[in-house]
Length: 213
Ligand code: PRP
Ligand code: URA
Image 1 (cartoon, protein in one colour):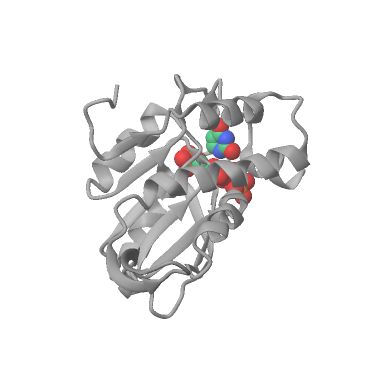
Image 2 (spheres, rainbow, N blue to C red):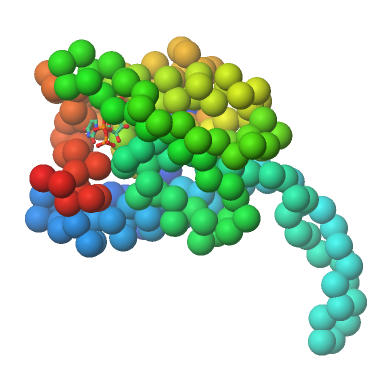
């Protein structure tokens, strides 16, 4: 469905698919669920940072001096959407320890399925940073779209969205509202149900990460 859309990166690596299948299993407990969400975020991060610029530096190895690549100092921020996005933070910070972390709190109104904002705290220099927005689930797309609109309000120009699992409806909303944003996701499921849950999905990501159900 999104094969020809170069802004939608469906990451079909076998390791990601295997880990996503473990998340889907209703028997997977909180500890394992949390660990795997973090691992998936790290694996996705590898793809989402593929275009980071590098520069050449001279390094003296124990054998000889050579010219080698290092990151060019591009500033990054990650912004988890509370709560479930928090589960992706550590996996990314393991790879990019210098990234700053903003937080945006949104929940879906259970009746209207519309996002309601309740918290926001961004790094003071967020406008100078490339931003990766984190949320395991992209269902209707309402939460992620609102979060991206909010972050753009700070002047951010380069924003990516990283999810574990999406519904086609959510991807379409992000493509419509934010055509400049690249989406990285490990799976795209069939549809949403009448409660706007992804089918077959993996259930409520926040509840499964934090053990609240
Ligand atoms: C979940 C999920 C996303 C949102 C996705 O959060 O983590 O933020 O739903 O749905 P949408 O694409 O239809 O907006 P939820 O509102 O359940 O809050 P929580 O993370 O605090 O559990
Ligand atoms: N939020 C979740 O946590 N799961 C879904 O399937 C949809 C929204």
